Length: 117
Image (cartoon, rainbow, N blue to C red; front, side, top):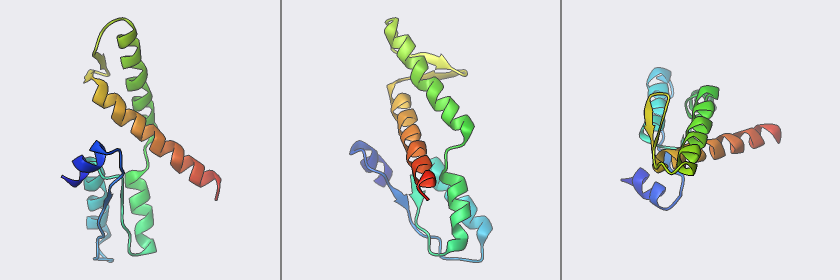
């Protein structure tokens, strides 16, 4: 419900902490599960957790390419009067474009942070 409410208002939502500092396997799993559920990041309690969280929540190059293909694919379909399109064997609608744009903004913000450090 928290994720849905955040999306409805255009807000980011961060997953809670993982307090077992020695169990990196379950922490990594928790990060990936949180990402897959729709969280935008994870609260951390120790610097050793940073690498796992960054790996899980940083968009991969293939995801960035996919997002761009979704955005351009639906734009082309809309320009020709269609409301949907198939990109890489998946049906794409407006809400997919919204998610793709969000991913690209997240990627751009991460790049900006990396370039300023």
